[in-house]
Length: 108
Image (cartoon, rainbow, N blue to C red; front, top):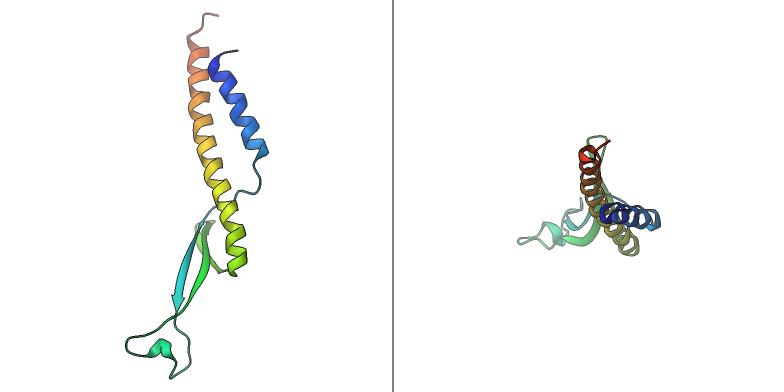
């Protein structure tokens, strides 16, 4: 077994051990309310928040959801897992291409 094939097996095993992998990002947003006379409408305004929001793309549409702070903490770990998954898949693609090239150049 070549070094590339061994690394490919390691990557596949690492992917199988990953937990939830969720795409998107979390940002903190400040907002204005609809109440007249609220401090968010003052000059200068003091906005409400920050509120953590999760943004992602689903079928070409941007979806944004406001989160509770404790949910944002949990979701951050899922986003980190997604980032790790993307890194592993990129490496897997490169190694697979290398293995394919090697197999094409071997005498039959």
